[in-house]
Length: 300
Image (cartoon, rainbow, N blue to C red):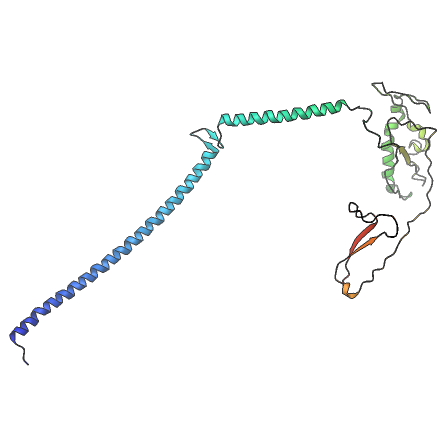
C-alpha cells in the first residue's frame, strides 16, 4: 500500500534521530577509549612512581647503613669510637692493664720462689739416674769407612777433634791437679773446683801424634765417655773394658700366607700374636707388645 504523507514525514523525522544516536554512541565509545587510555597511562605512571620510590628507598637504606657503620666506627656527634666513649675505652684498658699486670706479677713471683729452691751446680732431683751411662765419639751407632778414602772418615775425625778441643793441655792447666782415687768435697764451696784432664794423657788417641786418630791405617780410636752423675762415689777402681760381641742373631719365625684367588685385589689385615706363655699380647696402651699388625694386598 502506498504510504501516506504523515508516514513519510515520521520516517524523515526518525532518520535524523538515529543518526544522532549513532553519533552519540560513537562519541561515547571514543570517550570510553580515551578514559581507558588515560587509566592505563595513570597505571603506568603509578608503577613508575612505585619503582622510583623503591629505588630511592634502597638508596636511602644503603646510605643509612653506610652512615650506621661510619657512626659505629666513629660518631662525630657523640665522639664515640666503636660504640664507646674515650672514658669507657680508658677504663677498659686500665682494667686489662691491671689484670694482666697482676697475672705477670704472680707468674714472676712463682718463678722466683721456684728458682730459690734450685742449685746452679746440683740438680734438685737426680734419683732416677742411679748409674752413669756410656757414650762414644764419633757419634754413630755404626761406624763404617774405607781407610783408603779419607773422605769416608773425615767426619769421624772432625767430631773427635771438636770433642778434644776443651781438653787441650793449655786449657786444662788452669784446673786443679787431683790425685787418683781421692775425692774432694765441695758441698760448702761457692766456687767449684775442676780436676785436670789433659788431652796428652790419651797418647796415640789424643790426635796430636796422629791427626787421623788411626783411621788412616785402619786402627781407629774411639772415645768412650761416662756421663756425669753429681755426687757419684763408686767403690773400688772402676775401668772400662771393650770386647767384641759374638755374632748373635735373633730367632725368626716365617709365616706363609695361604691366600686364594678370592683374596686377591682385597686389602687383608693380618695380626700376629705371641701365644703359649705368660707374655702379654692384649695391652691396648701398647699395640706392639706381644703382637704386630700389617696390611697386604695382592693384585692380579
